[in-house]
Image (cartoon, rainbow, N blue to C red; front, side, top):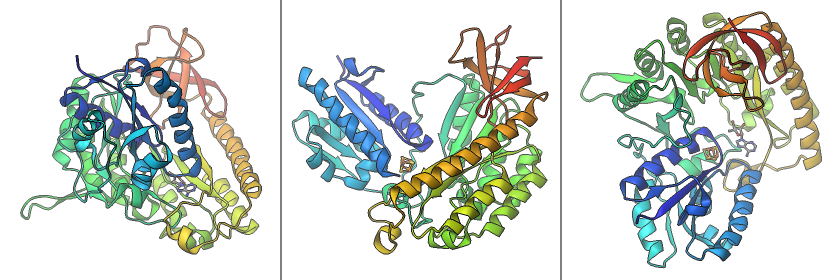
Length: 442
Ligand code: 5AD
Ligand code: SF4
């Protein structure tokens, strides 16, 4: 009987996509994938290193698994992803119930890693690559609803924002062959999927040079090709860097209604002094110009963001500038974080982590409160509007209700009527909270 693998994933969408590649590689090597820990011979934990609390969660989980291992001595634990890359063998020294670590560019070596572990050795594979994109691997769709899927289109990041560990854990930027991306999206559509999200740390720098002098495929061109597969296939993308958000992309969006009306555009701070220290390579003025371009080309587009509170030397004025920017842009959603100092980054070497933790918390809470109010006000404007919704499944609260998303990525909940998951229905908004629109089938 084949040995069984259980994969647990933490962190960003990219990690969830990577776990599906890992699943495919191990299945190909003869392992069985299971969705419960109890049946597993190997637990693989795909990890995030972006903030210290993400790493603490994983360490907590690893220690919790020790109890399981007490009961079943054969259970072995491996750590994958960004935390494995960052800590390498150090992690096995610090958490002695971890048998192996494997970084994000080394997943093809997992079968041989597992062989070594079965032979009783600890093992680490953490080499980064300048070319690996796993382009030829058809991911297994883990925990899939059969409706929406991730497609990874590029890997790595070399923007070197001064606070960020990703360039060190995921290596140089590289794009995946566009033909393999279009083929994967088409197969998903043929299998009944209706939504794909193209993923990369910085999708706008997607760039593929065709053989000979046949030119190149950049991100707008790639989006156009994927959107051309079928108007019933929704196409989303994440994440965009403001410095590279081109008018061309917005023009392609305007021409293709099935490219979803939602752009995630991390701002990080509303203060030019902070943006410079963060090495973000744009100013507040540039950012607002991009927001205006989005509103001009794609007027019904929602905009979401990431922001960091309490970065090195942030003054109350800098913080106020962030609040002001939030009031101007009026985001539909924001991921909001306290600054967390990461070993190895430029900020770790050169910039003091000098805002007290409770002050970071205070500033963060102020941003959260403001954003909550803005999201509620934005949603109130939606009441009375009708949207085409891709129905995804049962609402978590009630079996009588279904939920889905509109093109703007807002969740709508409505009485199920005769609607079926995986189909498009028109829903009228009748009420709202800050997080959800309540609607009825039209
Ligand atoms: N501390 C806090 N937040 C961070 N992010 C990245 N690095 C850090 C850090 N050191 C946030 C940024 C990024 C998101 C994925 O995580 O806002 O856009
Ligand atoms: Fe976390 Fe960033 Fe790695 Fe994703 S790429 S897992 S967000 S550190």
